[in-house]
Length: 380
Image (cartoon, rainbow, N blue to C red; front, side, top):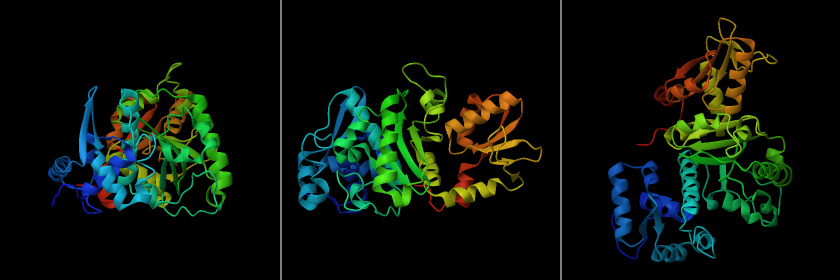
């Protein structure tokens, strides 16, 4: 990578992507650069050169290391693409003037982690690559969402007065995809403390503003679901626990979202996110899993996706749909019946601790799945 002070890197290169991600995030977690495309050595070199060229700087405090744009980088980006960057670098926005408290910085980092996951999964996540949906007044209610698109909470707040409804919500944004509409959260390595009323208001906003008024042609009958990202599989155990007055896990297991998926903030999560966004891709995997199984039996006391040779229910649980897994596990215990959950191999150990003795786990080789089914190659 050729480098020259006072000059931005070429568009559509890794250094340019790092600057874009930092501009959109306000502060990019330094550890997240490793998830971007390219070899590890090149990513280290790219960040080093951006710092050398006074375009990027490290901010370290309270054990949290982040990357921030320099004033010179903001000026250069504004000069090159003013329409794209002016909304990010004006006023007291978190992307223009990020806060320095630990709470605010953690929020920026969680937003950035989701942004990277969406981008890596092929979801349109940059404001300039998707239709404008959340603005005060739409000129038309027939905006085609042709590709899965993620809108951050900052973009949703551009609606103006309507956005007051989601004040206090822990959501990082909303995903509009062929598989439905998903409120998106990120608990990171910490325990999520849900703001139940704020999350209910967010769902109401999505139902009225998106499904009925802004995008009725595509989403009038869409099912609303939710996704929560986390660091590794450990948070899943806390999310599916009984909770208390602070964490309110009943919002996950018995709340208003019938489908609430847990995904990891890594390549595993990126691939499962692709499945949630692409019903045909998910159906292809379900068809493979259904070989040697009988068709599901609707109306059974135990929710199921198929029936095995013993007549026992089978659940495809690889998207970590927490309420669905909880309902399956609870119904099996109630009826004293054995059932099977299909999951990816990296999920098996955690699900084994969560589920009771009535559940048998059947693991799917994640790497084998990618080689045989997924058209999205694993990043090097």
